Length: 145
Image: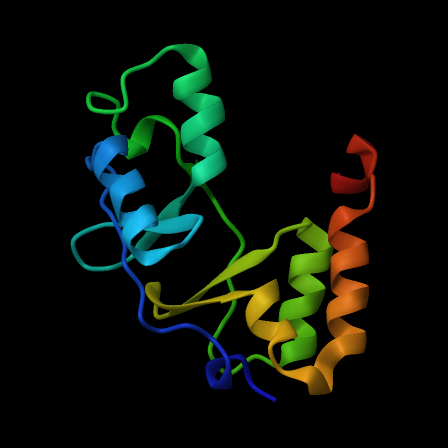
């Protein structure tokens, strides 16, 4: 199975200069915990999560109405391709211990696949279980080098 068959393509994204209050409102409205960050041409620049907003902004006493996404987003995120296999996507997610994988085509964001998207297809319950175990596994810093 190819990722393009299960990825979410109905994405809402923000620019680096979107404030965190607006970003949180998007998360609330669409019931999502991550929002891609793109430039005006929809080139993926990073991701911002609900956890980022809480840990990197609220917990530090910063104002979400004046803090921009660019100040807390994660850049340099790992990505996948629409034509990659489910196994390839799971391998990337496992290796980098991420639950969501942005999908890009010619640098432009075209979708997002989450562990939940994979889990919805019950034919892949073994892959989902293994992927989740790998994501949650404790790793030493040396494993990343």
